[in-house]
Each structure stands twice: as structure tokens, then as C-alpha cells.
Amino acid sequence: MAEDLVLDTAIRDWVLIPLSVVMVLIGILRYFVSKLMLSSQLPDPKIVKEGQVIVRARNLRAAANFIPPKSFRSRRVYFSNEENGLLFVPKGQAQNPQAQMFSDPNMAMDMMKKNLSMIIPQTLTFAWVNFFFSGFVAAKIPFPLTQRFRSMLQNGIDLSTVDVSYVSSRSWYFLNLFGLRGLFSLILGEENATDDTQRMMQMSGFGFDPSKSLGAEKDGLDIVQHEWALPKFEHRAEAALKKLIK
Amino acid sequence: MVSKTEETQLNSLENQVDNGGGGAWEYLCLVRKLKVRRSDKVFKYGLSILNDPKKRSALGPEEWTLYEQVAIAALDCQCLDVTKDCIKVLQKKFPESKRVGRLNGMLLEAKGSWAEAEKAYSSLLEDNSLDQVIHKRRVAMAKAQGNISEAIELLNKYLEIFMADHDAWRELADIYVSLQMYKQAAFCYEELILSQPTVPLYHLAYADVLYTLGGLENLQTAKKYYASTIDLTGGKNTRAPFGICLCTSAIAQVSKGRNREDKESPELQSLAATALEKDYKQRAADKLGLLTSALRSMKF
Image 1 (tube, rainbow over the protein chains, first blue to last red):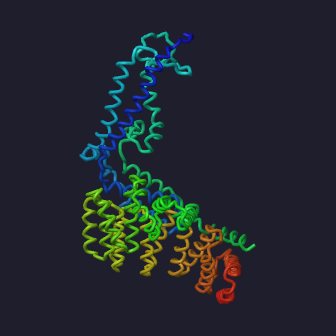
Image 2 (cartoon, chains in turn purple, brown):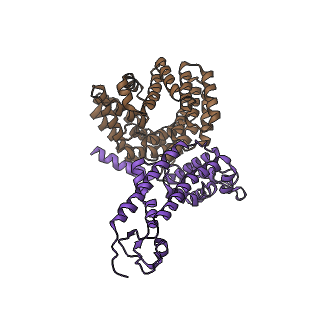
């Protein structure tokens, strides 16, 4: 079907714009609600220490060539030796972070609160969109798409001959969901709780996995070849002084 | 560390405010951001803003941060009454606040009532054992009371958890140097070099400590670090060429009979000496005589 459908401008006035406005307002509302429900979570000392260990190990790796070889070697042993090295996590002890997360009641409550504040408005808005704005073509996407997208974008429209570029309002809802993040960071400042996409990515990479990052740092440290950069500096100092004297 | 641009910005703002050109609030914000210690100016200008109700209401929610900043500056200038007033205002607005509790602890510290301050801090630490600022205040208290060994112990315990805090490493290095525990100080300076390898200050301090420790290997390493300081500062540092001359002559003394494997050391020493002479001629011509005689005595 290559003909152009003419869409009523009333659709734009009464569907697209109100939907965007409603989503912006709901986002702002969620931001203020999250500010109210802010609970100060006490950081776990073990996790803080591990974070700092990782920073220190990373510094060691990055600037290893600036300290004498003996100091570097002693530090490397300190970090990765088998008995009490800081980075060494024996295999049995590697805790399952998920289990840890659920066993700690405070953390579980926090997770639940954050998830709820995201899921409930999304579900409600989605249901509202479906109820009121389904069954008609809402917009035309300016670029052509393949047939695969038909089921995703044309959900309420039961005609299989309509061009896939004509989408229903559900797809406008999803577009707004992901696209308004930029707008929110302008209006509300950098840290806002409406960052759903980030939260969704965080949920998939569940929590801070200390044992894996420690192991990774240890491997990185073992690989480093120490090449003391200081002798080079003597030559460079000479050159600098020569230039200064001239 | 404060960068060059930030430093010039701070100085120009300071001049502007000192000469009555306004801009006090920007100056105070910059001081807060850079964490520099300009307590007398902060005290003067902050207090003038706070005492003027019009300017105070113009600040909005930032007013409370200003109260905190002025309270700490007043402590530094020993105007404890002003601090007490500020804390009272803050406590009315934020009862049960840990930050206000911390200010109370600092007030007790400034008054000299160490035991009460220690009690206040430990109760705050019970609520949140990972508050970095309170740990550091305890170290400062131990140091102020002259109890250096306890300060070292507290600082070491702090660093066991927060080992990426380079200010703490710096403080520990200073304490060790004051106690002449040079090997431990060298370790701390190595940590500092690791975290910030392009800051010439740490290279210089490390070289000083190594030179003080003595021994052929340390002297050679010290010479290399003086050289890296020269390189990092583009030759502008005066202490480093001195260090190089001293190291070279010390190495020559230590390894009198053995053959030295210095490929470039004679050049480096003579270059350093020439650079020093040029610098002195430019900046302190009357001391040039002293310099040349000192260098000559080192050059045998």
C-alpha cells in the first residue's frame, strides 16, 4: 500500500499533545514523590571498603611505572597474595549478591519502593492509553519500516494492509517514555527519579557485584609489567634544564 | 589540588571583594567548592551577608549552607559566640541533624573540652560509622592534644577502610616526617604518587625523604625523582636542582672507589648548577656569591 493516508489534524490536537503533556506531568509528580520518600540508606562498610580497595588497586595499575620496582612488587603481593591479599576472594566465599540483597530487609524495602514508583505510573498510563486511544492510526513515522514492526507498532489497528509507517498511539507512548528523559534532565536537573531506562538497565545488572570486580582487578594487576619510567625522566630533566639555560 | 585557572579566579574575586566591588556571594561559593581555607575573609563577608536580612532572604535555601560555612570560619577565627549563634539558628531549623551535631562537636573542640567533644563524636559515629569527616576530626583532635601516636593509630584505622583518600595519606606522611619515621613516610608518598602521578609536589617530597634516608640505592632513586620534579615543573622549581647537586655529590662520596654507572649524571649536575646560577642572578643577585661557593664545595 503506497498511498498516503491523510490524518486528521484533530488527532494531533487531541491525542499526541495531550499524551505528551500528561507524561511530563506524571514525571514531575513522580520526581516530587520520590523526594518525599527519600530514605537515607546507611552504606554497608564492607561494600565501601571494597569500593575503596578497587580504586586503590586501579591507581596502582595505572601509575605503576612511577614508583620503584621494589615498592610496586611489595604492593602487588599485598593485594593479590593467596592468604590475606585484599583482592583475593576464595572461591567458596564469593557471595551471591542477589541472596545478599534479599536477606537485608532495608535494601529489599528500598528496591521495592523504587520499583513500585516506576511500575505503577507506567502501568496506569499504559492502561489509560490503551483504553482511550486505541483503534485508530495516530501518527506516521517519517521513515519506512519493515513488516516485522507491524505487531509492535500497530497494535490496535486490525488492518494488515496499512503501511507500517502508520502507527498507533501506543507507539507514541513508548516513544515519549524513552524520549522525555532528556527533557526531564533539563527541567528537573541532573538527578531525577524519572530515569526509567537507566533503572531498567540497573535491574538487569543486579546490584554491586564485589567479588567479580575484585577478581577482575586482581587479574589486571597480575598482568602488569613494571617498567620504571623514572630513568627516562632524567633525560627529560636534562633537556628541560638545557632549554631553560639557553 | 586547586588548578591554576581556579587559583587565578579565586584571587581575582578576592581582590574584587576586598576593594568593595561586590560579588561576595560568588567568592563564598568558590571558596566552598575549592575547599580552601580563607577563614578571615569568609567570616567577614559571610557575616555581613547574614546580618543583612534583605541579602539573607535573597539566598533562599542556600542560607543554611552559608550559616554552616560562617560557623566553621568563626571557629577558625576563635569567635566562638558567633559560632554559637549560628549553631542555634541551624538547630532550630534542623533539629536532630547530624551536620549540626558535627558543628557542635567542633565547637567543643575549639573550646578545648576534649572529652566532651570525643563523646559527641563517638555518639555520632554510632549512628553512622562511615562518616569520613568525623573520623578525620578525631584524628585532628588527637593531634591537637599532642597525642601523635594515637593520631597515627586512628589515621591508620581510617585508611584501612578509606584507602583511596589521598588527603589522609598526605596527613599521615606529614606526621611520619615530623616523627622522623622516614620509611613509613616514603610509603605514604608512594601512595600519593600512585594516585596523582603528575603532581610534582609529591615527587619532590618523596625525593627529600629518600635523600634523608640515605644509602646508595635511595640516593640514586632520589636523584631520579628530583629529575622528574624538574621535568614536571618545566624547570621552575628551585629546590629540585639543589637536590640533584646534593644527591650527585652524596653518591660520589658513598661510592668512592667503585665504578659508577652514571651515564648522564655529570651533565645533569652541571646543568642543574648552571640553571641555579641563572635563577639566582635573576631573582636574588646578592646571594649569588653564597650559591657559587656552596656549589663549588660540592663539586669535588
